[in-house]
Image (cartoon, rainbow, N blue to C red):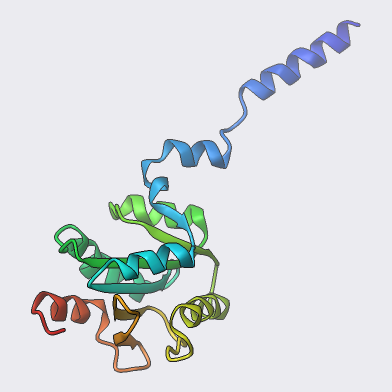
Length: 179
């Protein structure tokens, strides 16, 4: 009986000292609120209620994607006009994405497609963008930038394989009223 109580006390102590769950870590991190599950209905709504919408498809493992976000998109989000929608779609591991958002003080919704690496992530993005726009978009590389109007008419799109100018070029054209 004495061994049983010793065993029981040990179990209680171990359970009391266990590490927090992933959900506990997420709920204690204020950046978790910006990670959203991908929803075509929600994305359609953003597009329909915006004069123009910038859609940025990226992966958390791609350095070019991260550079474009840090140099252009994050600063633009702090000053963008209300009638410009921004949709960020990322293939990522949620933990790594959360770390990236926090490290870069990114306070805007990111629509998450679970992913991890390479060609599968590009295929996930390709499938989602084909569902939104039809087959007129080719996603062979990341990052990809799409600019559309409220009727989902594509005004511009760019990837690395298409003379990539990046999201900075698209933002500059919007700021200079070139659309």
